[in-house]
Length: 368
Image (cartoon, rainbow, N blue to C red; front, top):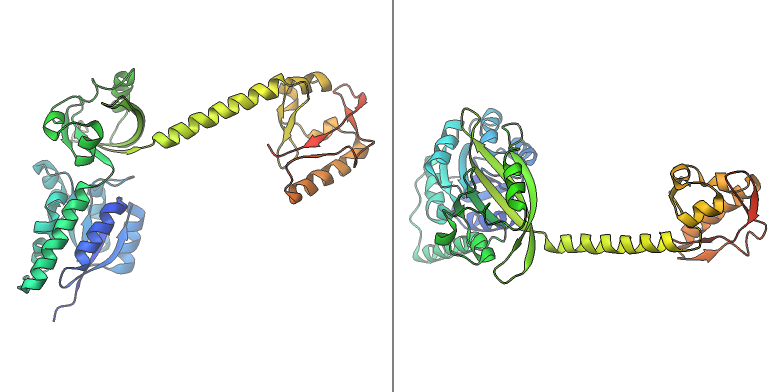
């Protein structure tokens, strides 16, 4: 009896990895030896696991699958490499085979062809399954196809001028348009506000040495909602270094952008309070160096913020009180309290102005 064919999955989509693992584990005489989500992990797993077959996605987050094929061949010549990708065009197949791949299977045809391809590469024939197994295999194929259609990431391919050549189901759902409406349309000219110009500048930044760049933009959806997306774009070049096509993967970052805007608003509000209060407010880091010095502090200590920030707090505390002040700050940090005044503990505490004159002060402390 033949040993199970051990397979290494290399793909940066956790959703797809889960679906593919489930599909393969239920095939006769096959097992998943391991998974990798980037080039570094893939090479390490290859050496450790010594798989029989590698299923490799062309579009990884930080590298191209095409670049990995010769690396895999050098490290494990006996392993068979099957490129498994959403990119179906014959040019990608030709590029993969030229790079050293043993076969090429589009992801949307994985359920129908992959098992046959793997058995063929390993010199085995598929055994005739029982009717029960046939039904189970068909169910797994259907589940895999549904999983691929349900990927939440938006995926598209487009020419250098912005003309769409491929969109996945998630892209269609997001923009509320059919695949037939989208393919052949130009997404750059339909971008919101000043993004058309920004996108053109973005697409001009790609080089063979920098083929992957991220870009953030927002869209106004058909329902009027404003949503932010982070796109990770990969450029594909011909032998002369000219860009022939882009592939882009987008994920929704609207909640993150909203949180960032709320945080900026809160900070702006806090800064407004700090700059308008009559009380002197200073902030220090763990080394007791000043990081914030508001206008009231400038007036009280007779020192501009530009000079105070970065300097040690001790310059504004008499030498006789510095040890007591530092111990109080340490004790406060250990206590976890949010506010405490030093009045009862440092009744004789004085503060120093920039000119060396002293004055009595009441100091309170809190987390900032």
